[in-house]
Image (cartoon, rainbow, N blue to C red):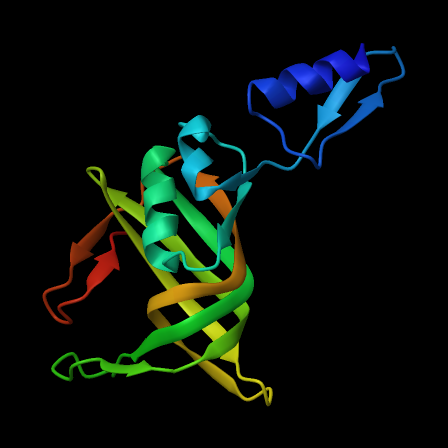
Length: 182
């Protein structure tokens, strides 16, 4: 019976290879799994409230892929964190003076993505992924900032934690930035 449940769950696409089945004291089977998807499978998670892992492959554009996944899954909003490797990342530094333009810097080559943290907001189906990263070069020198763009190197694994309420952004008159509305 346990094997049939696992096969059925795999066929309908709700579990991945990391599925385990355990028995309760009453003998009922319990399926425990991590939901792991590629960017083309996010639509299978429409309106999910369960955290999942988005696995991106070499050549994928990181922010576009995460944003499209959230849109395909019709998430209200989400918190994200991740790790992996990036190629030619572009980072921004924002001054505290709103009149200053952000400083954009593109770093050539491959960088370890030691940490990615951020959120996905949804204003009337207009999705925005806001992420900050900590990167390291081959000599373990650290770089950090607002992620403007990046191509996935070997892989990137993003934990997406859906929130059950929409997080809205609005342009702040003082700063000109799209800030989260409280």
